[in-house]
Length: 318
Image (cartoon, one colour):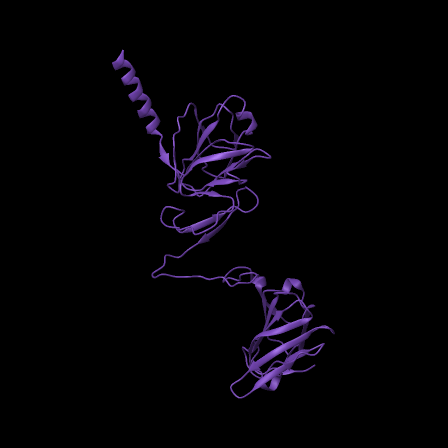
């Protein structure tokens, strides 16, 4: 009899240890003993009798919805392991029932093959996370995330607000040395080569700019045009570039009656100051204009535009 109990104890220890793992930060261990295994290839809502859920998503993201925490608190302790088994770039999106959370968050993503998470019904209306593999992401993960050959090779895929078949992929060219890309401490829109052509527009008629002009660059190759800035908008940047032949274009940039333009345009031989008077305007005069002359205006939101950048000879023509 003693030998029987010893054998049973050994068996229990072996079974328990077979599923003992360490969480993604290496801070705690847990055990998971599956009682029921299912495989899903489409959206699915778990039941309280489920245990191990293998998800294969060959052609689209798959949403796995958890049962309510309350349904698991009436005499049973629900514990689920959700595993993404495929190597595609489609995600497994784990969401709680309405009003519940997962570790205090509204969504979890399994983004790589074999990424998985183990959760159980916790206190209140929250699912307690027992384990997450390194690339199971919260809905607003913060801190540093190192992307290598395991995590989408060299890409990040953003689902966006809608869980559907459309994502934005950020791809990194294989670096030949350490590189750092730094975003400025300001708000705005990032322009990129080969993308939205509206970020760089060619003007052939006089134009009144609007808030939609913020963050854009305007190329002007036509003579005697006047372009009017909108009422000053905070953190709005508008650039005007003379792309006509040398000595071909007169370009004038005007403001409304209440706004001012303030700043300087420094040349090798002189510094031109723009006074900052209400209703200011600046002009790139034809006789001295050179292809590539430009001026960048930055809005303060308080009836003022500041000259952020300048190339060429511009005059205060208020």
